[in-house]
Image 1 (cartoon, rainbow, N blue to C red):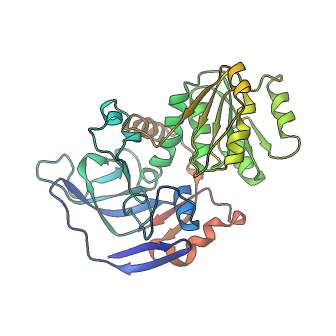
Image 2: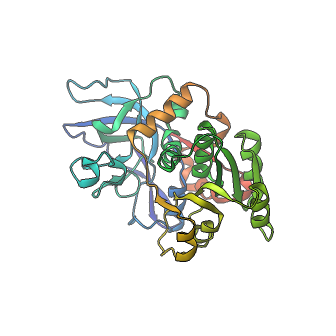
Image 3: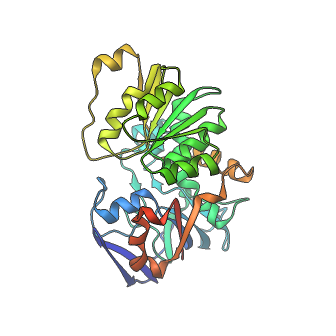
Length: 335
């Protein structure tokens, strides 16, 4: 089977590997679609803190069942999506239902080989029927779930003012689900094309471009009170530190980004606001279901999928996805 391996940062090579052997409790999947995530781009550029090379990337996937364990609810030919966070089920986090931050988590495409391949064997508890959605939609559930999880954790509610810093796919997911909760959303990013997409295709109220006047613009939008909830989805330490100043008194700051760096902030500023600071990692089954329900209701814009390529094209065309001029929001690989 064709498998694309990121051997070192910047190096992708196609290999012909044997089909995986299905373990007794695994489902053998025929991979059909794989969404390209910011994590994959970071792996390719050598900027992912939880990874060692070589690695088969890809954790946003949909496919069809080839074979499943006897007695499984999954049958050959079923269209499925995968929760790529392979949690242990027994650690302190899993016992509390927080499988997204399992102490022994193995994320497909990061800690273990992922879906840039034709067949994949996955424990059946992480494979779910994709009822009422297409293969393309099923391959986008995971990144949208990360945004939905961050929004749910924040507790954002109707009529609250929300700022999302970083208008990549994860930031856009946070925008979508904050709006579905009735919040008024502002996007902050350095790319005007991304901001235009957010306002025109996602219905975001206002886009503010990074620059010398951005803080003044954000203040003016909120009567100098700033935002009830701020989400950072930049993956940039300086942006993450700067975001503290945009949180209103009594507000919440959610760091969706993860970076291999220390993040510092002013303790007096933090305390005088009685700010709530949250980390948000991955997503849970509840968040996946939230996304699926929104998809079935037609609430997720199809415009998010802007680019396509085949698995065979990945070694030569993946680099192109990094070019800002290409206007990539979400690329999908067809296997």
